[in-house]
Amino acid sequence: MIFDHISNRERYYYLGENFKLALDHLASFDKYPEQKCSIPLKGEEVYLKISPLSTKPETDCKFEAHIKYADIHFLAYGTEQIGYSDIGSLLKTSFDPDADMILLSGKGYKLTLTPGYFAIMFPNDAHMPCIAADAPAPIGKIIAKIKL
Picture 1 (cartoon, rainbow, N blue to C red):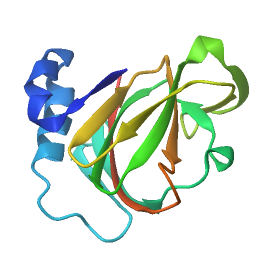
Picture 2: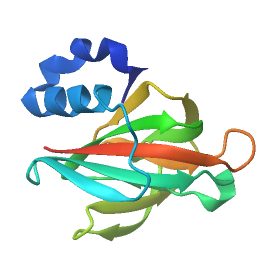
Picture 3: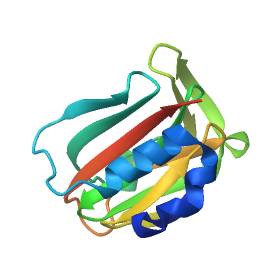
């Protein structure tokens, strides 16, 4: 897992051209779309999922992980906490190969995402998105999906 501000994105260009493409695109957003959409940057290899959401109590959230893709979580507005744990320390509850989604249960740590910050989650990084920092509130979420 990597957590940093988008202004430091060049530090992570070593991860490859697809990560560079996604990070640069996230940094260039000047207007956040108001509805859910997907933006292909390089076909299924790199794309953005844009989702205006609301955070929720931690008890309503679940750990997830992916096998085929790395995620870059980025906020355009709002505050979100994301749970984090190594996949090996959690219990797998289900797997949907078509959605590239493993659901898990257990305990982890939390980090706080605010506008301008991003978190890169790799396949061994279980994450629990959309946790309310205080009370449930709207957030502008962009997730870059990078095929590995």
